Structure formats: C-alpha cells, structure tokens
Image (cartoon, rainbow, N blue to C red; front, side, top):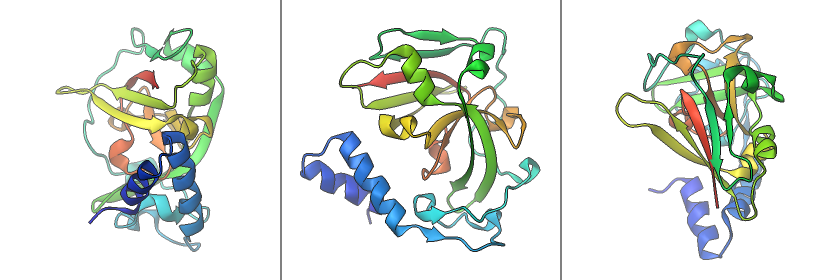
Length: 213
C-alpha cells in the first residue's frame, strides 16, 4: 500500500506540479497532519512512527550513547585530505576543507531520526547550512534538487532532496551532535540531517553535493 508521501507525489505529478511545488504541498499537508507529542514522551520509543507527521517540540534530547546506528559505522575519513565538493548546476563549483565548512553559516536544530521498526534518536545537531553552500556556489536557473553523496565501502550512498528543503534548513549537513564532534559511527566528518525523512535518507560520510535541474 503506498505511503501518504508517495500518494501526494503521484497526485501532484498528475496535476503537472514541479518538484518544488510538490514539496510545498507535501510540507503544508504534513504540518496540518502533525501529531504533537506530549511532554515526557521517550524519544527512543518512536521507532514505529512516521517522522513526517510528528511535532517534536516537547521531546527531550537523548544522550548520544543511547543512539542507534544504521548502515556503515566505521568509515575512516582523513580530515586533512577530505573535501566537500559542491558542483552540478552552479556558477562556481566548490571544493571545501573541513575548516572552511566549519567557518560557513551554521545551523543548530533538534531533529528526530527514525529507523522504522528498529530505533529512534532525538539529538541536537549542529552543522553547515546548505542554503549557505548554494549561495556560495551560485545556483543556476532551473535547479530544484540536490543529490548528496556519502562514502561507502561497497557503493556510495546517494539521496535526492528538494532545494526548498535545503533553503529552509529542513535539510542540512551536521558536523556535531549534542555539542560534540560527530562520532565516526554517526558519519564523521559530515552527515545529512533531514527533518521528516526516514533515517535511511540521512546520508553519512558526506563528500559531495550535486545541484540538479
């Protein structure tokens, strides 16, 4: 049976909406449908819920040692040679050191990650604004999506997000969690934080952002 997100995507595609238009429709409907979680809710108990329809304003932040992990957990990245590449439909492709990434406008948000049926984590993530990266690179007309790449020993992980989500900081790249540097098992040096998306889309070990049209 299709999920609500899939149904809305099919409906808006049939109506001829662009990806940006569909994203606005989906986000608006999700906001209307969100369930406010009461104070005292255990964030670790929400692994059977859909993050797209949860209002997490009352959730407490979990300690990182209670976080579950998924996918690769031991990619060893040399911060001295690592670069974040921003390319695709941009006027000025970027190749940024970790120091440069840390110097760009930052985002800090408490966001819930759900790996359905297995675990849920609620942390305060700090990182770089994708909106700042896009501004620095100069997005070309017609670009409406971002494909984000993460290192993997088998095949690199890739997920696509709407540009609008990046420009509202609903999606950003974290380099710290709960005030501490991002641990290796959670994707050092950068990982995706994507509010309302399943944890499988939170790409770890990020090294490239490709702007698509």
